Amino acid sequence: MGIPVIDLSGAGTPGSPRTAEVARALREACTTSGFFYLVGHGVPDEQVRAQFELTRQLFELPPERREALSVRHSPSMRGFETLGEQTLDAEARPDMKESFYCGMAYPDDHPYVRAGYQGYGHNQWPAELPHAPAQCEAYIQTMLALCRRLMQLLAVSLGLDEHHFDGSDANPLVTLRMLRYPPHPADADERSFGAGAHTDWGAITVLAQDAHGGLEVRMPDGQWVAATPLAGSFVINLGDMIPRWTNDLYRSNPHRVRNLHSGGRARYSVPFFYDPDYLTRIEPLPGTVPEGEVPRHEPCTAGEHLRDMYLKTYGLKAAA
Ligand SMILES: O=C(O)CCC(=O)C(=O)O
Ligand SMILES: [Fe+2]
Image 1 (cartoon, rainbow, N blue to C red):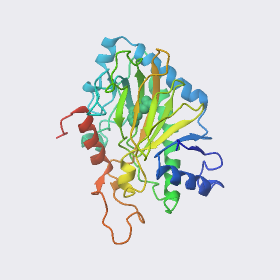
Image 2: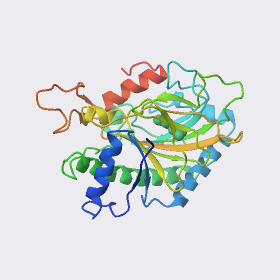
Image 3: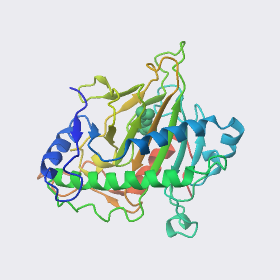
Image 4: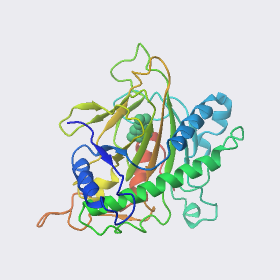
């Protein structure tokens, strides 16, 4: 079994003619691989290309500048992280990737920032790249609109009203990450990864990957399958919040990265992580707990769920 391709054309807005057909394809993907390629999404190639160009520029900044803008100096986890700073798979070596995190900017007097909710706050931008803030903000808005549409299609795929999730992201908890993977070292062992095996934690991830490949997905039968780059597509996957929301009907499958196919060059990727409002309740959706059974997960808020995951892979201390 491979990673399916879903074509969003003709289903891009509520009530559009292919809505039911795309929802059926989504249900199939979400109950099996939890991953699919999305084509016909309407995001201009040029906008994605510009994000990769910016990613390259970010990692060309001198190490001392990246250190000055480290996530360690940001209460909202925005900025640079260096090689080895995250370990996604606790059994593996630290990840061989560097990244830059940014997100929607929330002002310091926003109630969620004042409450210290993880992930809400301002960004850290390098002054050397003055176009970065507006460009990333535009990309985030494009991705947010796409994810809102995907949530509508997910609702239809679950037999719910198309607008069931509308309004669940009054203060979206979204993260744009730009990643650089150095070439896989010749002396790497079986515990060396660009990104160790992990599931994503949030609701939906929209990944733009470059043409080199290197992402691998574990299918329900345990096989690792390459997410071979498909020009013009995004790789979409569900994070752990969706199984929690669907009583494990929909899957968040493990994936990992090894930069093995780039001919000794760096690999770049740009994932966007979509989560609803920090305070959105994540509990089984109507119709997902079979008659006579008890829910498989404790209810929580989206924010509580994410905070637990960050603590796990960064060894951060719990926020007071
Ligand atoms: O770089 C990739 O292809 C995947 C990155 C990833 O899985 C993540 O950041 O969660
Ligand atoms: Fe991931």
